[in-house]
Length: 126
View 1 (cartoon, rainbow, N blue to C red):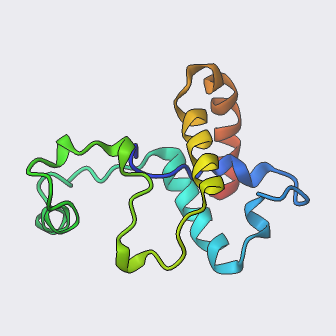
View 2 (cartoon, one colour; view 1 turned 90 degrees about the vertical axis):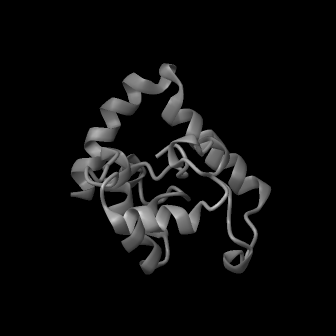
View 3 (cartoon, rainbow, N blue to C red; view 1 turned 120 degrees about the vertical axis):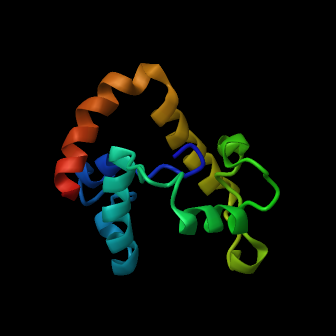
């Protein structure tokens, strides 16, 4: 999950008038954010990924520069977008906000607060 931009489920707990409340998003974005927030909050891991041939094939296709999947510098990949998929480049403001959310996830000073609200956010998503 280190290579994935934050999708905190606790964002659903924000009041509706708040600009970044997921309920204010376009309907399709909301329907992606809700399950992704749940998976992100639980840090779901597919237990058979190392032995699954489909996963091995996807890893080779998506990360051809790396011989070993475990050596990928995940924190550097969070803003990578294929040229063919980059219809609208991410503005620096969005990258800054995503980096701030990554610090919220990582820094120990936020952990007591995050653990408290994360559980409530997961309950909302479920």
